[in-house]
Amino acid sequence: MDRGAPRRADREPDPVLGRRSRAHIQPQHAGARLGPRRADLPRRPSVRRHASHSAGDRCRGMSILQSVARNIAMLTASRFVTWIAAFAFTIAQARYLGPGHFGELSVALTFAALLAIVMDFGLGTQLSRMVAQRSPGNEQALAATIAIRAGLWVVAAPALLLVCVALGYSAELQLTVLLLAVSIFLVGISNTIASFLQGHEEFALPAFAAVAQGVTAAVIGGFILAARPEIAAVAYAFVAAGLVSLAVLSLSQRVRESLRHPRVDAQAAVRLLRAGVPLGVYAIATTVYFSVDMVMLQRLAASDNVGWYAAAYRPFGAATLFPSIVAGTVLYPVLSRLSLGSRDELGAVIEKSLTVLTLAGVGVALVFALFAERIVGILYPAQSYAEAAGALRLLAPGLLFIYVNWALATALLGLRLERRLIVMAVTVALLNPLMNLVAIPLFQERGAAFTTSLTELIVLIWLVRMMPRDLLRLSSVRVGAKAAAAAVLTAVVLAPLRDLPLVMTVPFAILLYAAAALAVRAVTARELAALGAVVLPLSRPARGGVR
Image (tube, rainbow, N blue to C red; front, side):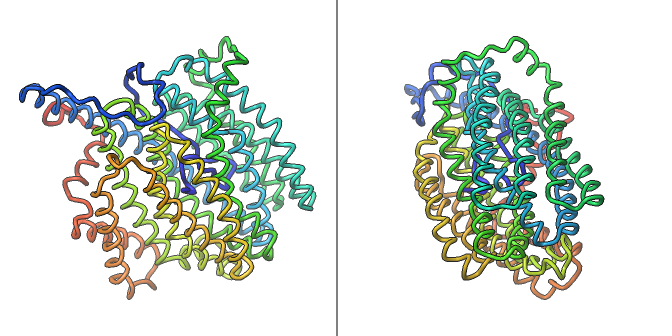
């Protein structure tokens, strides 16, 4: 799915995992339901009562959207800082290591991502959902989840190293994978704590921890690269960053209280692990089809081709941070909570999230497709990495599909329909390597990029077919069609201006796309103003009393 789909692992050892928003008390009688629940119909309410009920729903809906939008704004700001630090570190890696060693580092990071998702095994999503829905034993689940993840790491890390030996990797690459495995252990514990806090819809400390982790990796890694440009040396920076993240999250009073007298009930831990099996299988399968291309490219193509694909994939991966925040971090606990109540309210939130992510996905894909050469030229040495532009352009359509896939898959997970996702994920995990076996020998990194976008399109079609009909509205399709029309119009107007400096053309492209989207009514000025109103803190009560 989304390389981004709800449990998507990045190619960095800091996988983007679920983060959450501000919850309300849940009806406990519905907590055990696995599937979607039809809304109970009232018995012929009076007009006055119906009007009062509708007004109350609108107020609650606005409150939810305000909370969601503000959490998105806060997390986006923190992720923007992390994004800048990660990109600075990526540029340093590419410049100091060269395409060959940069590709090797990317292979090591891919193995680290696989280990991260095995260690997670869907437990982060399960923990956040338990806390968000106030399931029985949710406060004791933190210690149990940490214990389970540590046990999974003890089993999976040695197996991963044996695979590296069996594949004949060099001693330096094996050492790099080992160090990254240590960083994954630290980040995995940090992500467990973050999932617990985000289930309570507390975002400030996880956001600060993410910033501290990203900046630490970039600063220490930059100094190490300048003094010792080796891939194993870079891995030490990720270990240090994992320690910093864990230290920051340990400052939480709620976490300290939960772990003050940790009791890990073996039977409860087994139940938690069993409950996470569907999510774990789904997460592992999505990570396989999301990461296997890098490993296959390393076996089927030259090292420079691996480096070029890695160079194209870094900005592509960074661009998926926004849907991971909107859907995987902020909306997931909200959707989990709303799945126990009104279907109309749930459908409205899904519709708005699809609108935001569709418009954003089309815009980002448009920028990548139009300015691929310029982006690569700014980020990397032009002579060494010029071939990466073709792969980046072929990855651009996949970005749009990933943005929409995030919203759909997160909705299905919130509805506890992860079992429907497993068949899809396993099928695609088998199909993607087969497509790469054909595409990579013929087209190298461009074949891998094309396969990535094609895979995301297949996932999108499958997800649409799995969505409950009452929650997938025709208006979302109209928004997608109008956004595509706005993108085509923008591309036509920008064609004569593509040779201008990127600092001028990209902002102009974004403004032109926004104007075109308004012109074709993909989004209205009122909707844009409403979004701004809920994102910005309100200094006075809004009309109708909603703050």
